[in-house]
Length: 147
Image (cartoon, rainbow, N blue to C red):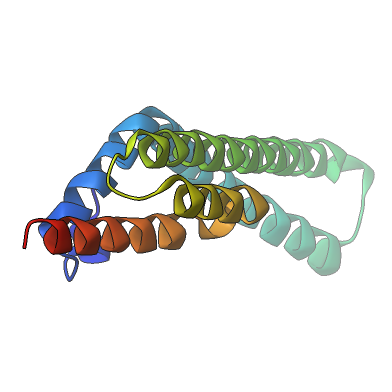
C-alpha cells in the first residue's frame, strides 16, 4: 500500500483500502512494469527517429536503423496500450470488491447502499472517494447505534 496516499486517513479506512489493494496487487504490479518499459521505449525511439531524420535525412544506409527505432517505438506503444487495458482491469476489480463490501454491510440501510453502488457504477473513476464516503457513513452509524 502506498503509505503517502493513505497516511492522513483513519485506521478503519486504511484497513479497507489495504483490502482493495490486496485484491488488485498483481494487476498493479503488472501495470507498473508495463508502464516503466513502455514510456522509455517510446521516448527513446521517437527522440532517435527525429534526431536521425532531421540531422542526417533519410538515406539508404540508414533505413535499417530507422526501422529498428520504429520497431522499438511500436513495441513501446503496444506495451503502453496493454498497460492502459490493465488499468481498466484494476478499476473493474477494485469496483467489484468495493461493491461486494458495500453489499455486505449490515449497518447502512439498503437504500443508501444502493445509492453508493449506483454512484460507483455510474462513475467508476470516483469509486475510491465514494467508498470512503460509505466507510465514513458506516462508522458514523456504528458510533450512533452504540450510544
